[in-house]
Structures are given as C-alpha cells and as structure tokens.
Length: 321
Length: 76
Image (cartoon, rainbow over all chains, first blue to last red; front, side, top):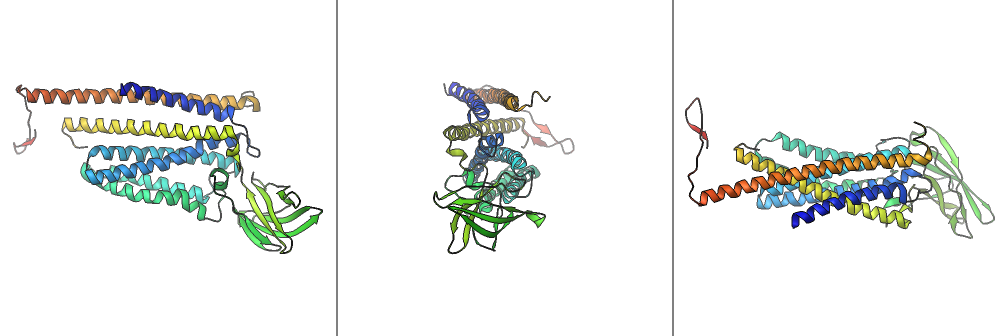
C-alpha cells in the first residue's frame, strides 16, 4: 500500500513539474522590461531555495550519524549534499542565462555569483574528501564533521554576503518580498553607487510639478559616462521618466526629491521588480517551489536507497566500501 | 531555422525542448527507482532467508579464503 502511494506520488511529481514548465512558458505574462527572460525566475529561485533545504538536510543527517553512528544516516547525508550540489548548479546556470540577457555577460563576478561559486567549491571539496578516504567509518565520520562546518557557510554565502555587498546587480529587491533596494540619497554634485554604476547628481530642474534630475552614470571601470534624466511628479508623488542604464535593462528612478536640501533619492529599478505581484506568476512560482521540493525528496530517497543497496551488497561480498 | 525561432513560435519550441528534457529525466529516474527497489527487496528476502535458515538449524556451509603465502585464513 505504501509502495503504491509512493508510486502515485512520483507520478504526480512528473505531472506537476511538466505543468510548471507549461505554465512557465504559456500561462505567466511577460514582465515589462524583461520579455521572456523573466520566466526563468520560476526555475531559478526555487532551485536556489531547494539547494539550501538540501544542505540543511545533509547537515541534520550528518549530526545524526555522529550521534548514532548508523551508516544509513551517512547515506542520507551524502544523498542530500549531492542533491544540494545539483540544485545549486541549476540555480547557477539559470542565473547565468538571466545574467547574459540582463547584464550582457554570463559571468561578471557579481557578489552573488562569487558567493554561489564558493559554495559549489565547498561542497565539491566534501565529495573530494569522501573519495580520498578508503576506510568507511573514518570517511563517514570526517565527512559528517565537514558537512556540519560546510553548512555553517550556507546562510552566510546565500543570504548575507550578497546583501552586505554594496555593489551587486542581483535583484534581491525584485524577487524577495520584504527586502528593498534602498537607493542612494545625493545632494547636487555628490557621487554615489547604484549596483556597480557610479552615479553623480549634476542638477535638479523644475518645470511645474515635474522635477527632472540630471545624473551622470559611469560604467564599471569608468570606461564611459552617460547623462540620464529621470523625473518625478511632485503632485502625484510618483516617478515619471525612468531611463535605462546604457546596455542594461535596469532603470534609473528618481524616487524622492527634497528641494530645500537640493537632494534626491535615486534608485535602481531592477528588472523583475513587482514580478510576483501578478497572481498567475505568484501561483506558478509557489507551485515550482513545491514541485522542486518534492523532486528533491524523491532524489534524496532514491540516492540513499542506492547507497544502502551498494553497502549491503558490499557487506555480502565481504569487501569494504 | 528562422521560421522555428520567430517570436511567435520560439516560445513553443523552448517549451517543447524543456518538456522533452524533463520527460527524459523523469523516465530515467523512474527506471532507476524501480531497479533500486527491486534490488533492495531481493536483498531483504535474502537476509530473511539466511535468518530463517540459521534459526531452523539447517547445516550451513562456510568458505574460508586462505592466504597463499602464510596459509592462514584471511576472510570467512
């Protein structure tokens, strides 16, 4: 009975993820400024979240192994770490595709890209460690300890490091509800940083209720400079013109103006901002999180079963594994 | 080539590719899962059989591998 239910569950995972793929391409609307590239968020963010879950599960089973010493816990810890690595690689690849569309380059060592690369290296080192030790008990014990230490870095590398970096183009404020792009308040003549672009507020012009800012934007490395003119409607209290950064799909917004202090709040409008406010996109996004989590559970049990079988066969044959 | 990648049809081509990849992965996982479960069942049956044989007092054979150099048992 349990086996039959398991089979039905696996079949449902297959249908569910196929449904997500269809919804990703045909049901959710295009987002202004992103076109079809915005659809990748349905794959990218859930795979990144599931990778955190997988590394957490790996750490829990590693702790259980150290506590109880049962090889089955080590099998689950390894299976979860491998799944986590796979999902992290998927998040990295989908992020690179998005990066190519939005930033014009697959890899630019953005803090988010660098931190996920370091995370991949940390877990690759776990697999290297395991393959370097022949004695099973010692291998399990050392990799359990390593896995616990490796997990300590996960929240820092995924949630903290990219947010404490001033210069990131990763749209944290676009996709994660509750977080915001703070922007930068500049007085006329002052210089600040938005993403990896240096911005200088050259002046503020008023025509009726419309305030237009002249902002000099410098490319990374100061290779070129452009003057952008975002504007703000004092009567409506809202942004009007939001010009795009040269060569990017990011827009420069004038979010607030203080005429007495002669200063303005400039902000980066990341592509995808407000993407999840659309009901269909939000439902598909949540369905993707559920689907990928279920897929992870399946992969975890399948890989752990294979490791169990391998171990049992090795015991029967009398060899050490 | 261009016809397949026109704005109107490109999204269906991308969907078809994504679905094909997923169906391929799903079938692969399904087959491995079935094989792994079959192997596990077989191992469990084997273990039960051994336990039963041990309990019923059936004579058991044992094999001892000897070291050629020293003539001592190295594995039983």
